[in-house]
Amino acid sequence: MTIRNIKILFLFLSFNIIVSSCSDEETFTNIPIPIDKNYLVFGYIFGECTGDCRDLYLLTDNKLYQDSNNPAGQQVTFNRQPRSSQMYEIADTLLNLPASLISNSLEKDVLIQSIADIDYHIRGNIDGKEFNIIYDDIDSTLNVELYRYSKTLRHVLKQIR
Image (cartoon, rainbow, N blue to C red; front, top):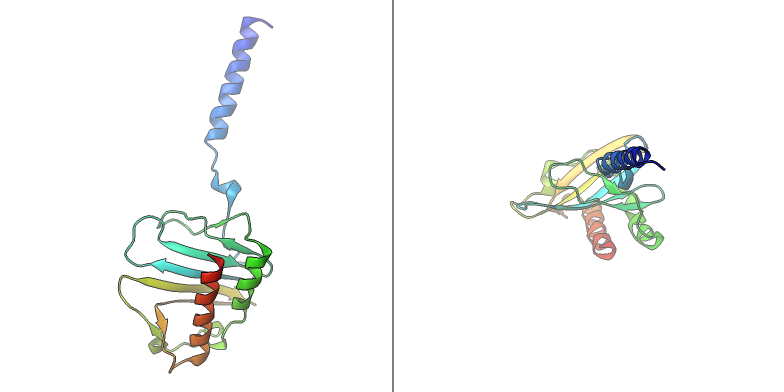
């Protein structure tokens, strides 16, 4: 091999290393929310916080994924590697949604908001019906069904963390 061939080989390898180091890692490690399928995003978001201010999960018909911990302000994506089937079975109970959540017929007074704390987040699309709520607590006297669901959500979050 001549010196010229070695230089060309070195340049070629250097170019490939540089190009591959510039590729977007997120493309290979994270997945977006599958808005065209049934899904449920749930978890909590911290009010007064800097950095990673959320702990969210994506629940599909057969998998559970954890938030990829993008910095605040960036699009939420989820780790490509799903959580264990045991964790999925725990979270699967959340797919039994209250009718008032799916129909978006919640009264404003049901959702209790506080300042600078943890907000629970439930967003999804089940059978073409989209819903999204953010709350601190549920008034149990105004919507017992949603209050029970919120308690189940908190229990699931404790178990899968």
